[in-house]
Length: 465
Image (cartoon, rainbow, N blue to C red; front, side, top):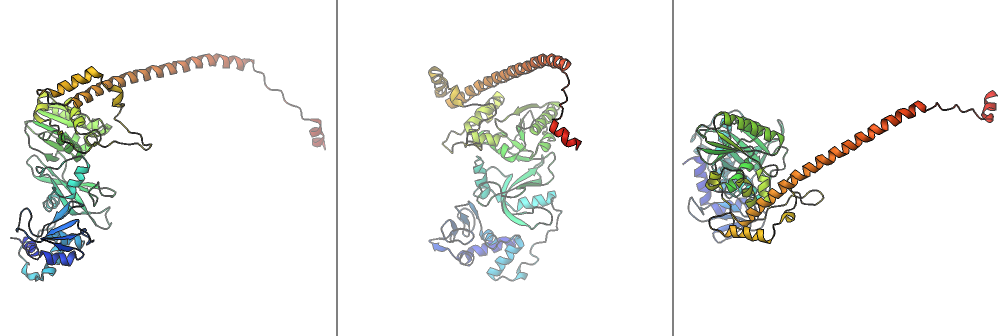
């Protein structure tokens, strides 16, 4: 047992004394200690277990804040309560509380040599110091992005006090952060993506650059899931996690930027590559470059296009079933059966994006679905197909697909009308200009210079004087 684990065990054996020291405004309730929050505010949101086993679920000394979903052991509690930024300071504070001599732990573990800042080794050390995300602020943040956290995401971890510095020479700050491990094809961590979070987990931290990466990223990425023949690659971490909401068995890679996506090298033995691009010029260019490289290697490349700017916006704006319907039309038929899963359990409604004026914004070229509602016979046919056991797709998905086709036709008609109206306006301008030019020339020929006005007699007498 290392020195840190031994100190954590001793703190757990004196859990109530720790709570009375660092959370003095709380009180004991049965086998737990209750207080408002980690800042020692009176209340009951934060709970510390005073009894229980030494390890595992319900262990003595474990704490959780039900308001923020934060938790940890008593070393984490001391670090947060005393605003300590380094693990060495936390251990020193714990030794002081336990009245342990310094020499008891000197030399028990070899000191690690310093490594360059931002190097792959520094990224590996940072990721190793974090913990899994279930029950943390990272899980709260992902839920706000419409992503349910499962236990099979070893590439994601949470760090409660990750260092942040606005620029070189600026004071160092600590913020909770979501960490994503960037790995190579063999699974070795070569970098880390840090996303600093707000203290309540509702979004990113209010920082100038709340997301930064460190280590070696080129030709690597955040890999989620294992697979050998089919793979999906995209830019953002939340974009690829949104795909896994409806395609949970599809292995994905987040390249973290359009530049790294364009330079991504597909693994050998891959049969089909899905490219989840963003709806901007840089994203389209990156998808074209990656698709050309995949075709040159004999890999079938299919581009997945979102309705909004990316697939996370599609998930939070349109909902899970609409995202599944959109992907169903873009996936290969065998991959639909293999990967596509629609969660039909009742959940939060998709949010609507409102403009500054308060009106609801819809995807590009899309109008209200109410204008394209099917008639009674068509609706009955859609519901009949949904009740068929051989067709698991609900009627709402058929209706969304039908409305989308009507909207495409509307867009084509609108573009034709705009072209026709624009050409008509330009033709009218040219005709008016052709008629106006000869008239101006004839008027210029017949025009006589204006006569010079003679000054009045009164002015002439004044000038003569």
